Image (cartoon, rainbow, N blue to C red; front, side):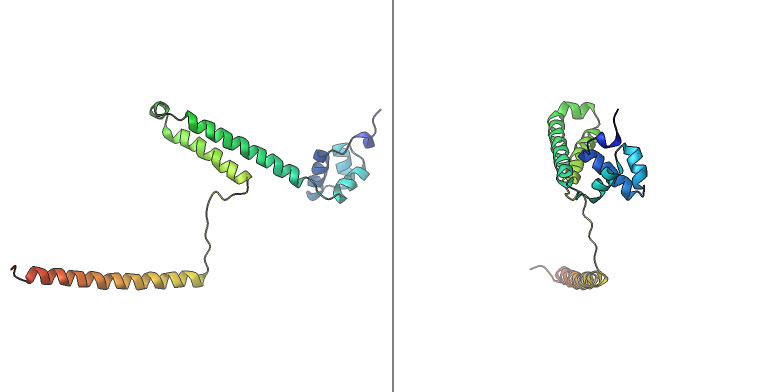
Length: 154
């Protein structure tokens, strides 16, 4: 007959124990839920999490699979299929695969700029100055045009 301590503490079980601990479960309830000893729960709790590299490897592999899928999808998008299928469906599928691969690699898939009030004020002043210069240049061009229209041709 198996005892609680007989189950090997795999990385997966340790990770589950850590998750349950962060969710507020007691050592006793985690022990019962995962069918491991309380000592095993404490071991998982105190052990440094060495699963980061495992998680990163899994993410890299999944990203690689998504890139390969995107490449295969792209090669299957032919002119004939574009005529038969809504191009948007094919493009959305391809873009989604690329987007998910980038996310798994920790790359940006969108760009968001946050500017301070001072930066916005400076840009506003530059735009205002450029607008005034443009108006002056337009006025000069219109005056030249008017003057040219009034002069007799020679």
